[in-house]
Image (cartoon, rainbow, N blue to C red; front, side):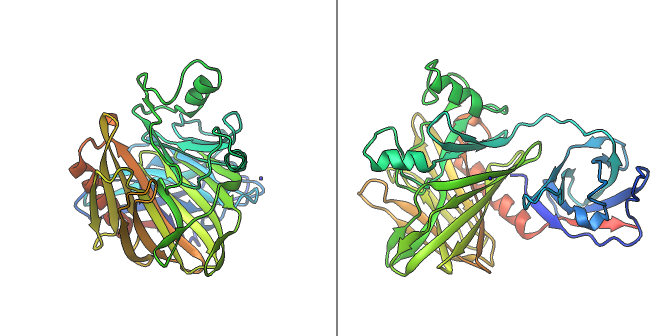
Length: 391
């Protein structure tokens, strides 16, 4: 100047603090899962709650308290102020059980393999792309917009979200772009890892947003600025800013923070908006030949469609406090058909989750499995794990 679901925990510690210059102090956390389903989640701990002196803080290590096994963790600087303020912990816990974790300081930075990241892509006009071990996405920047507005066919005018259909669990963004820019191949052809054959155009793609007024959808153009806040091994997080855009009710300001966790098919989007108290999130319906599923009791929305010689499911999950209503638009005009979910802005923010599953990836190869995944994801968001400090 970005699912494994995520729980934000504010821990109040008065007795167990890390002492400056001492690495023997430990904090023990107890995670409880009272539900009937096994959970695989990322726990987020506020570092300020651990009493760590930022000026002397070393690295942090997390272990299973019962087995001594080292657990993958990640420290984040959420607000990009140069100070780490969050610790992510990978937590796998069985139904109706408890698990203890020990957090301690270490002199050596833990090294973990990362299967997720995000980056600006100047070698392909000015895309921004991100991925994890399940899915990959991209969206488009100001140069692509300028080219499109000048009539150059290499440009793209869209703030919609593009799906890159991968079927391997390792990163493909860099290799696919390299293949395309060096002329060695095309990411529009599947040579074993997947491909990009998803049409965005002027649609919202998979989870792009806008404002819906008098049965018309108004949207921003391409992003104007980006900032990577975190890059693995458990989460990639970044921001995208947009130029203010016009609606019949005035200008709308939009900035998005997007995060994608390891193991998740859904990314989290937190949109900061001004000029409107309602935001609309969309899934393109492409040729209107797929199956639409809506569950307003569990706050998820799905579109499962034929896609090339395969099938593709897209979804949106929101939380009760944000949900308002939905609209289905089926049009014969290109790029106009959408499943739209209308969300209320709270204190100028809207939060939702969106993503996809490609049948050829074999993650959720059938529509029923995809809808079950969306339902389970939504239930976990509404019923977070219990996390507390052991004093």
